[in-house]
Image (cartoon, rainbow, N blue to C red; front, top):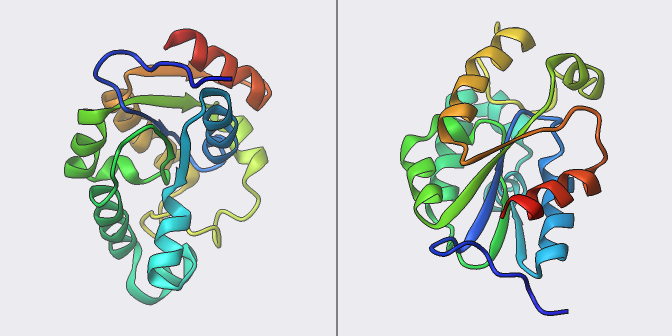
Length: 172
């Protein structure tokens, strides 16, 4: 099977959304479907620092994690790649500008009630947020940023990852 062609001017696809939205799972399946490379920026951060995301937050604070994430994204070569970003990637304006220059940005939008069912470890998951910030407040804050940067918004609902991949491919 030959790789599918991305829209003119687009070299990659970037997935954004809340923790628990399924960006990594959908990203792997999408990369396979399109014959593209796959990168998970959370894993790149952990490889680069030798620490989990939660260890970075505990040792240096949530703003340090956001800064590291932005630097990792700025260092990405965007060529025929599906990129699953961390949920906080949208806080880095220069990182998002870098991604949008060479990629189509897809927001996987999942309802807060479903995300809360999926995330059982909110306090220890390594989510870059103010320590006192509730999940609902984080959702509201980030949702505005996801909408701002998205080229495509996928209302995920409780659909399976392969169904989301089919919708994304259909919209390319």
